[in-house]
Image 1: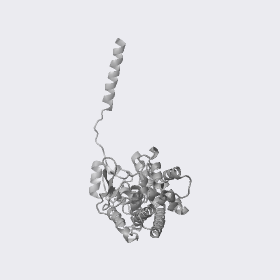
Image 2 (image 1 turned 60 degrees about the horizontal axis):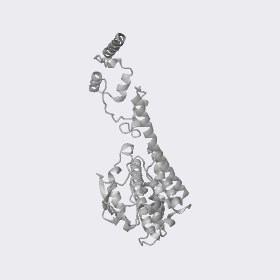
Image 3 (image 1 turned 90 degrees about the horizontal axis):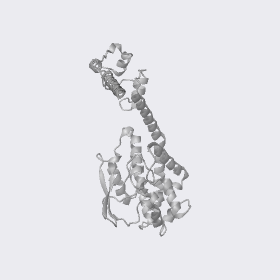
Image 4 (image 1 turned 180 degrees about the vertical axis):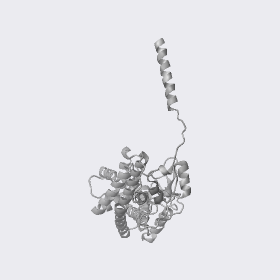
Length: 369
């Protein structure tokens, strides 16, 4: 018992001694600028003023404004806007020292990734998206102009596809696509809300369903089209951002806010998606670009949890067997119902078909009910 008490005493004494040893002792920090290595070089490169020097000597840090220098490189580099330009033009170009911390290394990794992504998007992904949108729009428009406008499945699929790719093409080029007069209201509805100075949620359509709550309102979330991040300030990247947002967030077709449809109407996303899949499949070059664009964006932002091109092909094969093209099967009598029965199976639960063109996985899913 005595030994146990002695051990307990020693443990308590050791704990108290440790607390005393680790108790912080206030000390006065010294920020003598004359002792700072390379200070003259930093002061010259960043144009530190006497007032800023006083703050630096008092607090050990100071925030300085990046001035627009008169330099032959001016206009090429923008250190105040782009991180990579700051590192190259202000630090590397002036041979300034770098204080290496874990945060600085992580930040540098982020900057390198961000810069690399911008180059990939500008030089590769944007041209691919533009090629696919131009081809798909022109093909849809040609089919739309050549078929009867009789309200059949084929009509709605080509109509929806024409509007859908007209919006994408308009966003990528910055010019409103030339659509038939009867489709211009739909195209302008989307573009006006996407480009609005203050984007907002907009009621898309009221749906009647055969169970409670019986009536639901679908909304478009146009707030997601507000350009941000490294896309802001670069015209090409701003167009790319909005187009990818359109592909990733908006379904192939939901009627505008001045229209009303019932749940039983047979012209929503599924038939349109199969039609789009077929016209892309018919052109090997653009089909390859579509898949590459899809694969790269998924690799960058994460795998989609919505129905993607591979999932759609699996559903079509299960419903209709092996075939190169499936729209004729869907448009045939009973075809759309067969596809919907397949998509109603548990393995497709909670997945969104309307995003199968290109799902930008980093974004929240549509629709909002």
